[in-house]
Image (cartoon, rainbow, N blue to C red):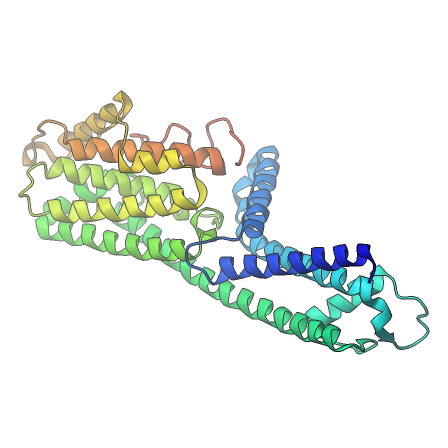
Length: 371
């Protein structure tokens, strides 16, 4: 084999191995997302956001299809690159293949064709290797193609399950706040029923948040890019409502001995872990630092004060505010930092983070573009 043939075969082998590693990490490894899959998904999201910014009336409907499209596109890119990799191995060795019919000179197109039918396990047999090591390449390519299909089907099933967990949390949050998109409503609606009733709801939310965090940890795609035409399912909106519920819980239970306080702290920890998982997958280290040691600004205190005023007006004599709870202010700072960073990546949430008004229009700020 000539020098160019060794270069071609080596490049093809490296490309094929890289694709297989990318598939392994993305579909089977719980902590790593393959760089090819990540690049494809982010590029598809950026393109869809750019188109959606030009077609504002159907933006949500358009982006609702991006998640499934990303999965299909990622699979197509994997298969296409793997076929090219095998073709680059085969191309310099076409003289060791037997072709049926009237083909006199095999070309790179024939190498691509052979690679495609081998990886797809079709195997027409019109082009066949005659040397043992190339026959082994054919077997390896076929097994890898079958493995890719199996891995992707399994991955899709797990993605659907992960999305169900995320939607379950969103629905519960939506229902138990009366569809108001205000986390403070968890306290205002259920505190009159007694401490135990409110405590049970905080514990239930924390359990669901942990389940979602576990799924997102293993299947990062569902963290951000799977969207619904129903705003109630937006992950940013759900996290903002949950964060506001935590702040309201801290304001209600400023006494560390208050019965509901441990449940509020449990939800706070579960939510912070969930945000940390998303930040580790998609955002930079400054966001992780902000989650671990929040940098409180005046806007955070003002937001907590406004929530306290809402609670005073709604609860009246049943609750009197004290000094601002530092835990409540820290929660507000973490939520603001996380949602602001997320806005720069997804162009979905308001760049100013959590809002005391609880407005549902997620698109009123100027787009910052997808990362």
